[in-house]
Image 1 (spheres, one colour):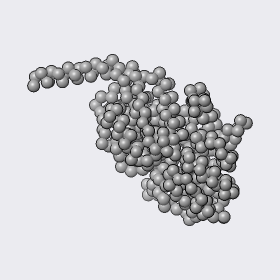
Image 2 (cartoon, one colour; image 1 turned 30 degrees about the horizontal axis):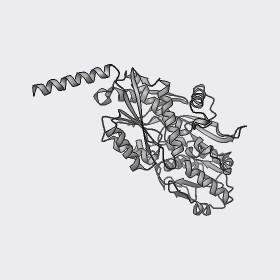
Image 3 (cartoon, helix red, strand yellow; image 1 turned 45 degrees about the horizontal axis):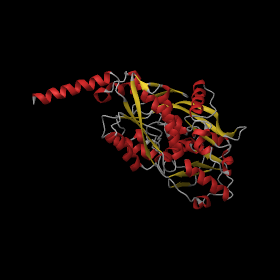
Image 4 (cartoon, helix red, strand yellow; image 1 turned 180 degrees about the vertical axis):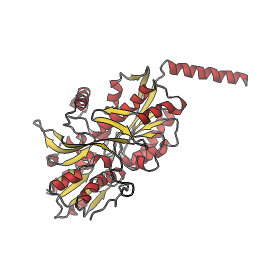
Length: 410
C-alpha cells in the first residue's frame, strides 16, 4: 500500500512538472465537414486555425494541439463526434459544433463531462443557452435571433408588408425567423405562410407551388446546399419575388456558388454578426489575414464566411482565456472558467461580453447583398446595432423562444 501511495505521489509530481514545463493543451474542434453545411464547416475550421496561428500555436508556453472532428448537421452525429474528442482523444477544451440542433445536443452532453470546457463553434439556436444552460458550455457568438434584429423594420421600410417564410425545420431557423418576425409583426407586417422544409432537402417544387401571388417578398432561411438547390429550382420555375435572407443564406459559402440565380440575391436584405464590407480597422485586418492564409487556390472565399468568423471568435475566446490564467486548467478549469465568465472579448467587429447564461451580447449588422466589379457578391452595411441581448430587448413577460408557431402574425 505504501508503495502504491508513493507511486501515486510520484505520478502527481510528474504531472505537475509537465504542466509547469508547458504540456500541450488539447483543443478539439468540431464542425460539419459533411452534409448540407460542409462548405461552411470547412471555413469554420479555417477560422479556428487562424486564431491558433495568431498566437504562434502556443499560449503561456503550452502548445495548442488542434484535433479535428466532423459531423453532418445531425445532433446524434455531433454528440458521437464530441464524445470521441472528449472520451478517446481526451481534449481539454472543445470548440463546436456548427448547426443549431447540434448545439443543443452537445450542450446537453457537456453536462456529463464537467472536466472539459465546451465553447460553441457556430451554432445559433436560442435554446442552447436560454433553456437549461450548462455551467461548462460557453457561447461567444450571438445567436440566430440576435442576428436578425433589424431586417423586419428594413423590409417594412422597403414596402414589404406581406412575406412568406421558407426555412429549414430545426431550432436555428426558428430562432432566425423569430428575430425577423418580432419586429416585422410589431410594425404591422403579415406572414401568411411558413414553409418548414427538411434539412438537406432536394426537391422544393411543392414549396414553390405554395407561394401566394400577393406576397411582397420571400424570407429564405436556408443554408449551404439547401439554399443553392432552392435558388436553382426557383429560377427554373420562373420565380420573381424579392428575397430577404437569413444570416446563413447570405454567407460567403452561398454567395459564391456559380448558379445563374445567384444574381437574384443582389438586393437581398439580411443581418448577422458580420458584414463583408464593414470598414472597421480590426475587421479589415481580419479579412486581409484570412485572404493571405486561404486564397481561392486553397479553398478560401473572397471574404470570410459567417462560419469562419464565428469559429475564429470562439477559438480566440478559448485562447484568450488560457492566456489570462497562464495556461492553468487545474481544478476542473475553475480559474479558466472564471476568466471566461468575466472576459470582455475583443473581436474584429467589436467587444463581446457574456450574460448570466454564458451567452454573448454583441453587435448585429443589417446588410444588403451587392456585386463588385469582379462579379463577386458581398454584404454591404446598411446599419449597425450594438449590445443586442438574447431577449431582443423584450420584457420577460413578452419574450418567448422561437418555434414553428412562435411568433405568428398571419
